[in-house]
Structures are given as C-alpha cells and as structure tokens.
Amino acid sequence: MSARSGRIIRPSPRRQISRRGIAGVAAVAVLAVAGAVTFSANSAAGIPEASLDAPPVLVLANAASSGPATPEPTRVAPVSAPAVGRTRPPTVKMPMSKVAPVFSFRGFPDDAHLRLNGSATVADGRLVLASGRDRAGSAWATTTIDPSRSFSTGFTFEISKISDGIAFVVQGRSGTARGSSGEGLGYGARPGTGRPRIRPSLAVEFDAWPNAFDPVDRQHVAVTRNGDVTRHLVWTEPGFSLYGRGVVNVWIDYDARMHRLRVYASRKSGFRPAEPLVTTSVDLRRIVGTGQTHVGLTGGTGITTVADPVAAVTAWNLKLR
Image 1 (cartoon, rainbow, N blue to C red):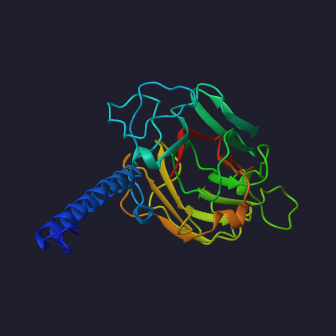
Image 2 (cartoon, rainbow, N blue to C red):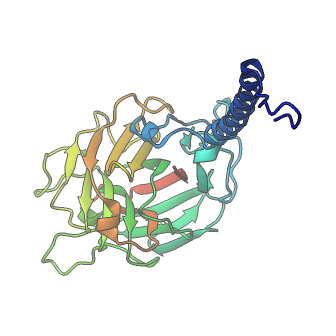
C-alpha cells in the first residue's frame, strides 16, 4: 500500500501465477525424488513374495572334486563334463537377495557339519545311511532351520540293490533322533510295535520295498507324518526304479506362506522335471513346532534284504527362500 496515495497496490495475476507455478514445480521435484528413492528400494528388495507360487528351477551338475559343507553362491553352476563318482547337489536358482544358503555338501570327504547316528557313516566320499542287513541310520545337518521359513533342498542318492529305502526328514526332536530299520527307513515304524520312530516329524520317503501296509505293492514316493510309515499323506509311483545302477536326483520345495510341499525326482537328467511327483498341503510349523528344527536324511535295510545293499547320498544342499 502506498502511503501517499492511499491506494492498495496488488500484485498482478501474472506474478501470482508465476509464484504458484514455482512452488508447484518445487513440490513435484520433491515428490519425484522421493518416488525415485522408493522405487529403488523396492527394486533392490528382490522379487515379490507372490513369486513363490512358481518354484525356482533347480539344476544338477557334475563336480570335479568334493569338499566339506560350505555356503555357495546362489547362481547356477555351469554344467561341466561328468566326473566319475562325484556329483553336485541340485542347486537352487534364485535372486541373491532372496536366498540364504544354509549348507552345501558336494560329496562327503568327512563327517564335518553332520550328526551321524546308528549305521550312518561317511565312506568313499559318500554319506552311507545303511549298509548290510537290518540297519538304520540318520544324518542331521548341524545347522538347524526355522520351520516358518520357505526352503528348497536337493540331493542325489543311490541304493545299490533292492532294500527298503531312504527319506528326507524335518523333525523337532533332537540331533540324535533315529527310527527303525527295515520298513522304518531309519525314521519311522508301525504304531503299536514299540519300535522307535521320530516324533514330531515330516518325512518324504523313497520306499523301494513295498510292505503290506503300503498303499501300493510297488516302489513309491510318499509324504508321512510323525514317523508313522503306515499312513501316507500323499503318494505316487516314481515311474522308475529307486535302486540299481546310477543315482536318483531329488528336489523338494516347501512354501511356508502357501503351506505347500512339492517333490520332484528324476533318474534321466540332472534338470528338475517340469511337474512334481507329489504335491501336498502341510503346515510345517504346526507339525514340528515353532523352535529351530533339524533337517536330515535317513535310511534303512531289512533282514530279508537281498545280499548286502548300500543306501547312500552322494550330494546334498539346502537353501532358505
């Protein structure tokens, strides 16, 4: 306002618009910077949780040498020329930001990072779970896992002659847990027999010797609970022999958010099949408890086993997702 004329001098509309425009541009610039930071953070966080609906591709390759359990990179190892007597475990292919390596055994030169029970031992670079007649063995990783986390595991096994089989087991009991020989596959037993079985537990069994209580009079892959070998949550025939010359490649994915377990297996290739052998709905935390749980492999042979079979694992890894 002018003191002499008494008139009020107002800023022109053009000046008002200019100032408002400048303020608007500044606000947009601030929002753009904030948005860029947010997008960058979201991008660095890895793939969204919904991607767990599509399990990661697992690849099996051959290794030239073996070594103790060590964390390994999350990238897929290149396929090299076959090496006699040594195989790499199926390896999880996932973004590095979403995968936490737990352990990886590329052969078994010794029993480091393992807790062995019963007939389980390490020999000739293999984890031998059961050898001879009427044997039961279990091998647990010394590193435990959180049952509320999703995980992927892969291993290769071989059973030299027809015998009972092996199993992958998650259990909340102890590092000394072991089930029965023969039909118990080293983790279970028939209820009411008084024979040892691991409880609480969830097992994926590869049963090469059918028994009267089995769902089919042939070899099968099944999921069982609490060491009860007579009750199968889900089962199927593998479509190939679980014993004999050569190894069987196994991939198991557990999705903790969806409570879904998928099991894949192949004799023909080190690449995971497109379709799982079995899929079932399980809440691992409800089955084994909320504390840290043991993961391992078990095996068993019976008294009627032909000759002296050997059930052994040649490679094994596990990664959290």
